[in-house]
Length: 325
Image 1 (tube, one colour):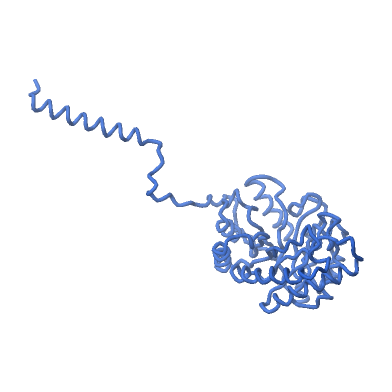
Image 2 (cartoon, helix red, strand yellow):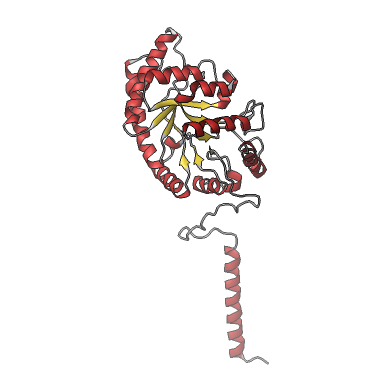
């Protein structure tokens, strides 16, 4: 028979064990206290199909293009792009990112050997007549926007910035609108040229209201601005929609082209998903580059034809195929 003292100690010990068990059960499933450090975020594991490709041209993906395989952290996406062999990157929305993130992205790109492509100078020009109307404040507003872009370019190691001259001012003759656009662009070019930066004017096909739509028109404006800081952004998707004759238009405007962008038509997805023979186009440009000792970034400004990781894999394979010339 258990003695009274032993029985009391046994009951006390049992009660203590029950209390501990109850406490552990109560805490199960609860979040850690606010003071506890959060577990570090990790990027998704590298897909088994992933490999480093040896591309001939500097194709430049953008944020979100590999979000399923790389995760949604911009820095993780940059690392993933480098792992796949991409040596350039573009980010239309870079000016809207925090200065801290711009600097982090620029530092990482330098470490990874990735060249920064275009970002968009936020001018308010797209959808308005801020370049074509000739209002006294237009030139000053554009020069201010270019000055702000200089600081962004320094943080992310950019050289090229997209400019869209906006809409027609249908109250004015076309030649006067062209003259106003040239005058406004000259003010921005003066700002950028001091820092070795280049605005690239993009002819677009989004709407017939846009003033700048054709490669030859961009060529004329760049010749009129007459500055190394003003060149053409030759977006092959938009050119195909507006006028076709991609190779011929590249040849005609070659000396004023500063940057290329890619997108198949119809659909604006990766090469091989539409009617354009990008393998031949890339081969033609590459030959001209070698002959003239020039270099370009080719912005991948398009969507993914297929969703998810499989779509991201298919996109990379499409570039491997188009680059095999």
